[in-house]
Length: 161
Image (cartoon, rainbow, N blue to C red; front, top):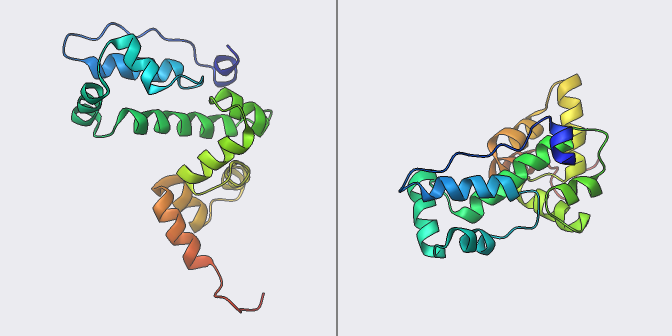
């Protein structure tokens, strides 16, 4: 698979989860299908459980919902793929389960506070010159902290450039 060739990973088949470890089976499916258009409903169908049951298991073991975990996995894969200069944003969108690059860009910006292009440029700068406060906040601390940092560095209305 192209994603495996780029990242150097291989499909790993997870061992069957012990009884009572439903979330582990679901987590394996989320990881296996995060780069295609698989939905939580399809995961539910393959596990023969209700949405409420799966949600309860995820909250108990991971302190997040299945949808939040799928989002976390997709953002992590997008960040990893953006580190590969040979891939276009369109290719990365397709590899992370989005048909349209604009939807991928909106998704990535919503969850990281940066556009994919800004993330890629910042990552390049971070490896060559060191990251600034805004980039460090955006990459490490999450969207809310990045937005706070952005507001701090933004000039007040009417200020001269």
